[in-house]
Image (tube, rainbow, N blue to C red; front, side):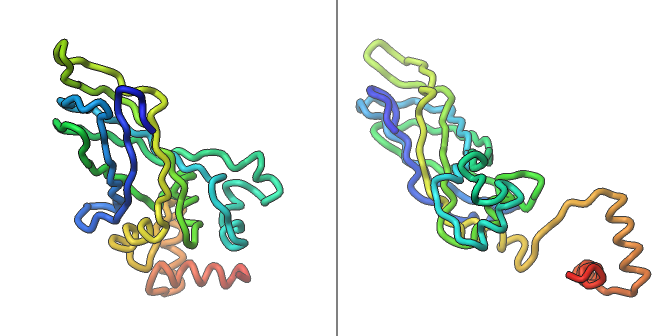
Amino acid sequence: MAEPGGLELTCLDARADPYAASPTVLLRLRVREVTGATVHAIALRCQVRIEPHRRRYDDEEAAALADLFGARVRWADTLKPLQLAHLSHMVPTFTGATEVTLALPCSYDFDVAAHKYLYALEEGVAPLLLLFSGTWFVHRPEGLTVLPIPWDLEASFGLPVEVWREAMDQHFPGSAWLRLSRDTFDALYRYRSANALLTWDDAVRHLLKEAGE
């Protein structure tokens, strides 16, 4: 979205970061100054939201999302935006346009609604809204001007689900993580030892079998 006499920001694509220490998706942004003035720098902040109402869901995805949004009949009221991340980046000097990369962290923390949402998707894209803020420094005839980034500067982007899964699989291939309280973990550890189970998967499967699942 462009601001007359100001900035235009567009999200071009996304890819998994193969070198990150933790699961990370790289969002490539195109930044353009529409008047041709030289931009000295931009202290850019970006709030990333998921907009669930902007895509369709098959029955399996709907079932996986029931914990977040309830049954489909309620979705007109419950399909609300989800907060995913707050990012920041320093854009260096440029004239006309440049490209920068924002690092979007990913997680299996199912206590965070946005991560639970991404895990539930089978294919297609996750509809993101990037809301920009910050400060930019531009050279104009009267000298260096410091301006706030307009509050309504934003960009929509469809994050491919396969990119998110690739980022996760690079660090947790074929697995997922659950966060347990210390008491629950200790009880599960005792259960595993008492039943001579080799792995945590075996312990959980054993419990599920006892529960009739």
